[in-house]
Length: 33
Image 1 (cartoon, rainbow, N blue to C red):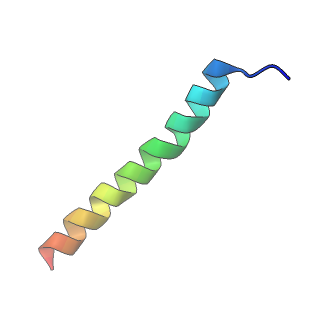
Image 2 (image 1 turned 120 degrees about the horizontal axis):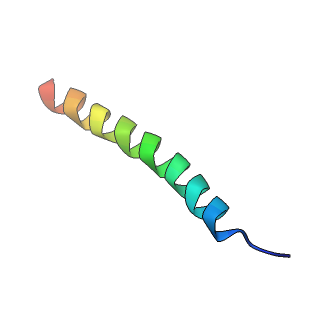
């Protein structure tokens, strides 16, 4: 089974970026209260 490194990196970025973005928004909102 061949592992597509670029696909793996793209998938990882696709998951990590929105997650970190939501986490930052959550921290900002939580610190305001």
